Length: 178
Image (cartoon, rainbow, N blue to C red; front, side, top):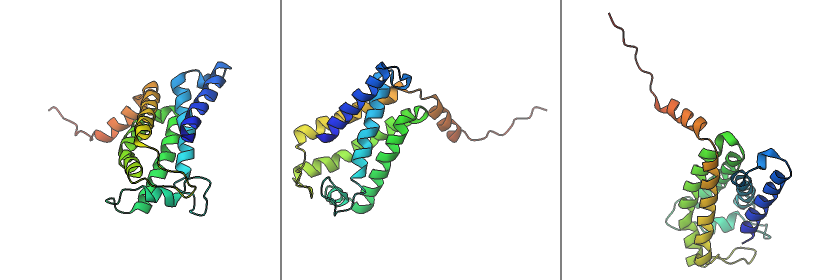
């Protein structure tokens, strides 16, 4: 629940800055992209916090919510933490916002099974926090998905499309007319 509050408050603060004349935050989608980045910094930090820290979810808590059929839960937790951090950085950079939004959308869909497992298995965190009920967690995940896609849509995808096009194009042999 606190992450939802962070997302909303950060978005409102950035939009208020836009209303006060900070041009970067003159639109809601850009403010939401930055608000989501702040939220992701908070959520990603839990992936790296040692088990001795109990004031917030920690790495050990994150490992517990990885469904048992997935291999290398420790590595997966670190990987998803890094992806969240990269997504946060990508959202604040205009040139990468489109790609970051799409990447985060894919990540949020991929992480949904872990969130469902957490709720169904009723996993508690070291700080005493209990699993978010599914009736709340799935709408939250849909909200995060909507925000990153909305933010991505606000960005020009041209630099990313140009980069992807350059990677896909193979050099063509020159045709010589004799």
